[in-house]
Length: 324
Image (cartoon, rainbow, N blue to C red; front, side, top):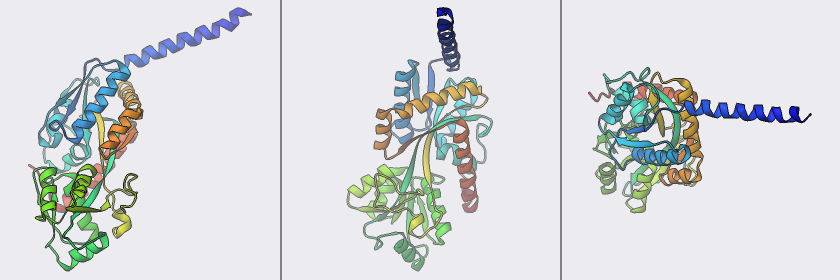
């Protein structure tokens, strides 16, 4: 009788060992490289380093973050797309580089569909509609009334043509039926500085940038771009509830790898990224950046990327934006 009591335990132990080995074999060969398409210090870079640090702690595998700035992340994406399709080269991508770039660039040095494999979402964030304090508006409805009474006189600043901030403004103008002049700058900081100085009257800024500007006392946040209010800013309404029904813009960051990577490896990486995002320290670090930690598997993440690519393609075509 003892024999039959022991055998199931032995079988289960062997099965567990084999399963663990099979999963471990799905991890790509190290060291794993995490490419970032921007200079150190930006949102992509910060998130990539948080992910890489926790990934190494969780798996005991080496993950190295490498910055490859240029072309709105297209250079880094191209390098990843050319890599051996085994998951050893990753990219910390974002809505701008992965969902908008295929529309604003006529030619890309990679196939945005076949060359890129979504792995997992890491974080998402609303942006904020920020206005200069001298502008006599307290909410979106007052802003719309002011803009309609002075068509073309208001200036909306952005970090550059084709950025999520720029497209947020174009979508807002289209859905609200207002004429506001877009002024592109070379980055978030100079755009916010000119709004604070009154050279431009409004901008669609990241939450950290918006909060920093509001803390200066020179600008104020009148709405957020998400469908629901932001937990850390419960008193700030959404644009959708403030007079532009259906308006929604969400920025996101996620991990991608080379197209053609075997799906077991992709799923294994996604599991590890989800485990990283679940860590309290990581969630706290992401939240401090004004973002919401959020993991999605390969299929769901790919659907998100595709939906945003289609959405922004319509906006890009309506405005006629081309960066090459």
